[in-house]
Length: 293
Image (cartoon, rainbow, N blue to C red; front, side, top):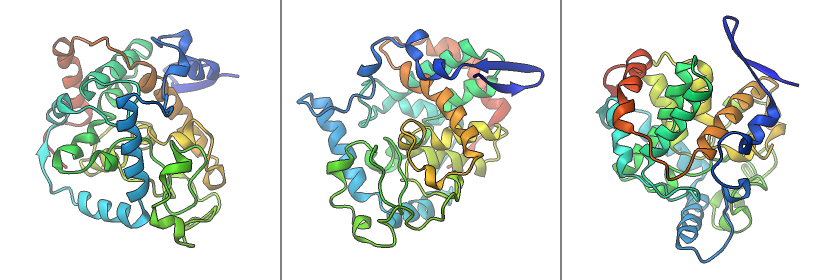
């Protein structure tokens, strides 16, 4: 079975097996080597494990609500999309086991591979470029555990497929709160993806920044941005008891995006200076001017 994406004047058929088997397209190493969170003595792994421990200890319902109140006033700074992207030159994601280079390189790697495979979907190219810009929070005294890494649902029991699930939540206060530590917690059955509160990070922040600044990116782009780090849901199939049928369409797009986000991570650096004019034109088309952050 194949599913169709796009519009009637420009369609593209995707075989789901291609989405889940990117080694047939462009992965630079074995699939088993991606997202390897195994517990070894590699200093990089120790850093990652420490970041997730802090995340899983501190990301509670109360914490997320406070972050939303704080950051969604959009009165912290003003910057264009390009200016925000350039800040990622100085950021290495402490939760990522696949790459140890500035995040802006990853942004262009993702965008350019999407551009190769979907030449007519300029909104998708731009989505690939900007999907991690919310990580600018790190430059405003937010710790990386409150910005990067996989997201998960707060306010109900933690799924079994969260990274370091068995060891890193022991000090999280919500685990002792009967309002939040059951299968459904504070949610209703099949309430839908958009009714869930996820751990706070760059995904939710950028999603809200774009809405506030009235982007003209299509809704599917916004959902890709909002949920691309929600691995327990889109890659492990968790939280199905909280989903609506229409969430399946969102998952299809997130999975398409995920292979470009994940499997383009390598040491090959694009010619960013040469690429800027193309992407600046897309920024002017979909998210122009100075934004409120």
